[in-house]
Image (cartoon, rainbow, N blue to C red; front, side, top):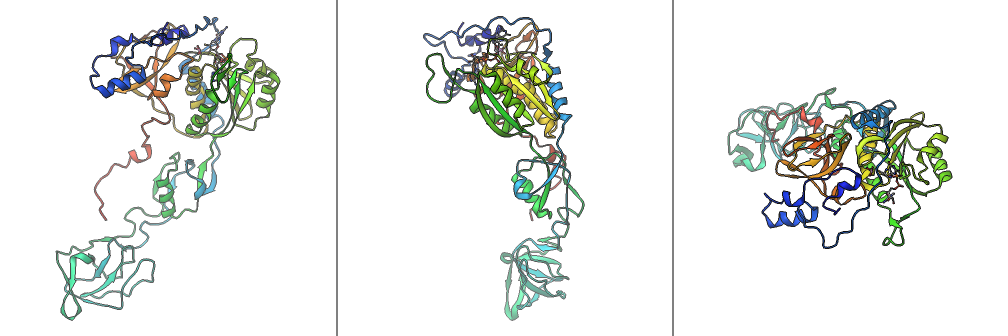
Length: 469
Ligand SMILES: Nc1nc2c(c(=O)[nH]1)N[C@H]1C(S)=C(S)[C@@H](COP(=O)(O)OP(=O)(O)OC[C@H]3O[C@@H](n4cnc5c(N)ncnc54)[C@H](O)[C@@H]3O)O[C@H]1N2
Ligand code: MOO
């Protein structure tokens, strides 16, 4: 087996031979990228053969992949978040816990959109030199027809004013008279009170992520605090005596690839990561860490299978946890599990093989965290696959893919112990049992950093016209 056929490592079939997918990307740059992604790279001179995983025993309890995701979503939804009020400065990145409703008209008064003159009636106008109006200052006296005052952008328009003329569109002539240099349309460059919204108007729906722009809108609309959904807390427990945290692998020891990856990934999924702890292969330490964790969700890595130091199942049994999902019909990652630890607390056990851990993260942790934090279910996007993807006879496969034109292109370094494919991927294609043929449409699970941003809140407010002032 070579790295060009790595999926065979998991006992499943790989994608088509790289030589078959090299056509249609003639550009030299694309060729170099393809090499990097192993879309079409020739085999290295002496590729280290990936080790074979043992044929897994029949798992009668294994849950079909779609049902496992649904079980994780339900587990998260059952303990959905209670909204709480936080100062604006602490709301960034949270989700709105209620509809953001305007607490004021915006603008809250008729205001000038430009620096210039407020005028009343038709010109020319007599300029009241003492009556200049600045933003934030006391209102000017009412303007009589035929008069004008200087006005600054954002200042209150004096009662009686019928338009604002920009300073570059008028000149003062003899006798202090103001002459417009182009037609004056009534109401021009005046932002009328309530142009953007009226008090009580819904501005954004509950569940909208609080972005910097949302903070700005909330402040403009009168908010000092926002009701937000708290982020679920997560603790990561990395198991394995063989793991190094620095330097090169040596003497059977390997670098911990999951510790550095999972914290940021979980943060990107909307969690507050309390910590990542390395437990080794110590059952007592694992029991203490699992039962003593203050987190809503404990994530373990490794130790899910049936080896002599695979402590996750025994520890869960000892802790009285309820297994909600014990194995999933998915490759890689089938030993993944989901357990209920107690009131409002769960554990997701990720397999130790790094891509299998990613599979568990997307299958169980993502839907649980999404539901638990009040985010709407993600809409998988779909696309036609360019190449054949061989499937597992009974199980779903998750395969890292990139986009090429309108097509999904499976990446070859997709073995369970490999991160090379996923690190270059735009998403994980969901390959149904039996596989996919070129042109078949596949669902794609997006990755938090490559997701096309959901514009759900704005989607219903299509631009109906331009507003240049
Ligand atoms: N008898 C069976 N053996 C195995 C089965 C099975 O069904 N029956 N399943 C295989 C599959 S599939 C997977 S996946 C693994 C799952 O194993 P564990 O969750 O128990 O994980 P470990 O044995 O601890 O580690 C597996 C593999 O991954 C490496 N690893 C672990 N943690 C890390 C880390 N943080 N960073 C990088 N690499 C890590 C570890 O060294 C092992 O090579 O079980 C199979 N066996
Ligand atoms: O080989 Mo396993 O499929 O990594 O879960």
